[in-house]
Length: 121
Image (tube, rainbow, N blue to C red; front, side, top):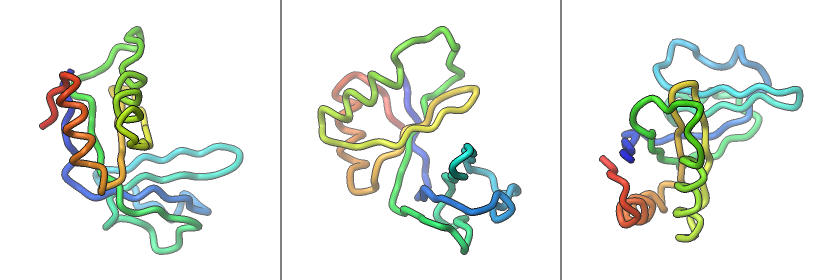
């Protein structure tokens, strides 16, 4: 399995309104439930009026489109990282999954995943 490093710093935020999010930016995830609106974005694109924000994340993208019938991909990656005491924040799209780790754990995560047989570039 191949993973692609995202070459940007990321922030995980809680916003009070989706109107605060610049939908013209090239990279972001929005999650909305009956309790909150969450945003993952490049740190440089963080809205000024967030309710809460946690900076200092880096990420990986699982390369290629994942079929919905594939089982255990995200759980295997999270298991490897958990065994190495690395917490994650995972986001999924229709095509693939994204795994975020804190910046200070990024190189450790790369090493753990490569040792487990993943190609990370």
